[in-house]
Length: 296
Image 1 (cartoon, rainbow, N blue to C red):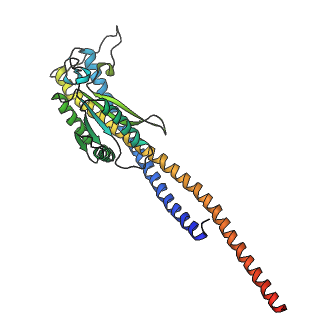
Image 2: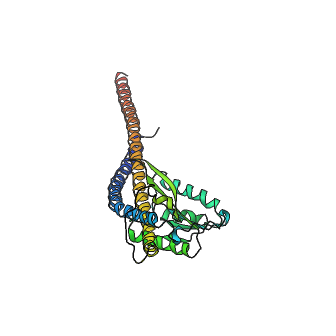
Image 3: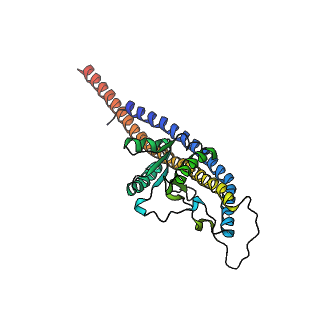
């Protein structure tokens, strides 16, 4: 059994750790609120782009655009695929990073010479350590998602897609499915699909709209913005999910620390009680010895 001083040292160490976990919980709580506000502020813009593309497709279903080119003549085994993998820059977020990396590895193993785009330092370190080729790394993006950084990612993958170096582009990220629940998923970013933008009900007259200089030119400008908006939404969702996961992890760590402190307090009281009992026994024994000495 450890002595009282050792137990007190362990208790102090746990209390210091609790201060850190509580502070991290509060920081993540603040950043989670900031991420939710940012997502809510940009959703109208994103949905407006989606509706605008849907309106163009309803009026001009046969409009040609490279971003909708599914390249069906290329067999599945020969398709060049790119994966944007969004992880965190830091750990201590439960299974958040593990789930993203696990899903990414499954699909990377299935693809022939895939192009990997790492968003997040933890993912970059993981794949670099395992000698997985990374096409490009986007530094310092996940800690401060912004439309500008989303556009940088979109411009790079759109460039490769238009050059024919990529046939399919996927994004692997984490989204919030509830107040405290997150889910890792993979969605196809390119090519865009007509079904994603809905269709007009049969028999319903279409509104009149003017597209200048042409529907193709309008689509050429809107589609990249839509892709950038989609990536931005995924970055913000991942940012919110990361801090939600970190909050849960820190809350669990704090609860475990409190349980450990309770057990150590009980052990400390037992050790102190045993020490007091031993001291009393020694005093009584000493008194008896002195009494016996005087009688002798």
